[in-house]
Length: 397
Image (cartoon, rainbow, N blue to C red; front, side):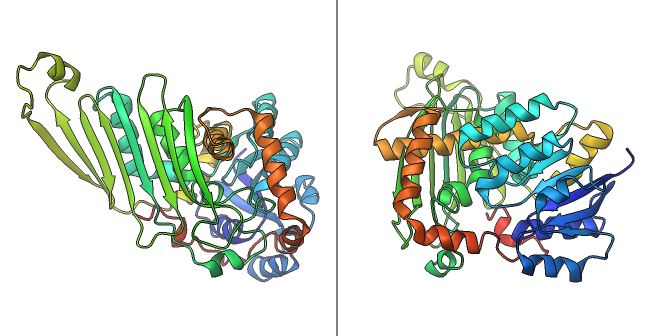
């Protein structure tokens, strides 16, 4: 194969931007061959934007059976990701999905099992924040052991400020039936992925997910998660869409120092000796240890979405290692699923949480919403897109 022919399912906010990137040749070795969307308005946009050589479908099943595509990019509402991905894999197509991997980890697990049955096909997820050099450097230093044994991870990421008009703009927003959750499922899948990408998966967590705390919505808009690791390390993750101005700050503490990431700068504070050694060998009660300070500034990086697309195509054409394998999408979802279960039960839970418990409790949430929002969600399942990547998808330091 000398080039990869893409079909995009869902051309709303993100799908339209991906479509334009492929059509304009921003991804070497890839071409846009087809798009599909249930919205007549989005199909009309595509008809005016792309030449007849790009096929336009109302039913994505027709796209999957088209002989003109080798891969699909799925940018539909959250609940449909797993179903469409499995159908595409069974149709013999390479699959790249938008975040989150899904809503229910049990369904995502089935999707991963389907992908593993088709090892000849590429399966990736649009975790574009993994391409950010600051996160990459932070992960590198943690894995290298520069900070020693990790004690604590803290991330305050509450610069997602949203107004009530944002939530009122579409029926699927801020609903258990439409999105499957609030800030954890809409804004934070990337952050939860980066957390586990750097630190690994926690063993247990207790979460406080406040539903409708700052807005008139059914889902959570304010969350604090306290997690623990097998080695005794802890993690605190705090997020909200109701604080302005917000903060985006990571601090990781280890036995050999700490790292702080904020405002696009990674600061390292490194000890000469391991703190555990100092603790038990120093005769002083409050010793003053030498600390080496290193500041690493990172310029704005190229568009992460395009970099993930390029990496996915390179993987198909040349075997390049995937930056974000699709099977890893379940990790961040297992954190958010566990957070919901913990908050709903009011206690600490294991990670992953019991899948049946999450599914049952989510179904109860959806039923409690009634038919009013479900009808609105069906009528506006895909928001309009401009064909451009919005700044709101950036790291937002």
